[in-house]
Image (tube, rainbow, N blue to C red; front, side, top):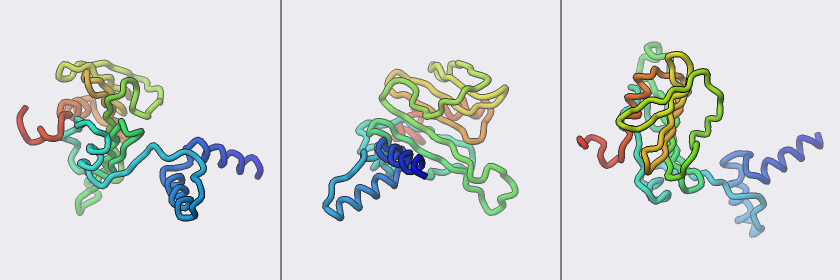
Length: 187
């Protein structure tokens, strides 16, 4: 039992226990006028994209087109420099038509360089393909993609698929990534 308690204390100290645990601990300590113990969470949740964009301070390029049935589930920022949008498949009335119910697509964009995907798995197939003049790294298996990452020279992008998609589908999504103010307008 002693090891479990010390492991929890270590995890809480370095901020890994969970997004809400530290922020609720902060609220509890504020109410008790005691100093917060641990680190504040680098994750902030927003109810609108506009609020998240205002918080991070740059206009992120986001996908305009996703597979049919996917809608925004949550919008977060990480360390005030990375936008993370989670899309979830929400079926229509007939749930038997699509088995993707509840699966997610995670999209991240940042001005930071390097791997922002949060996905550090080793994949059997890694392909680098030019899409709209950008070198996009696709990772997955034979004909399916789990992760696509690219840097457009200004913004760094990553899109991960909980349920693998075809290369054509992944490329189609990457092709639509642009500033949200241009969504619906030919550019």
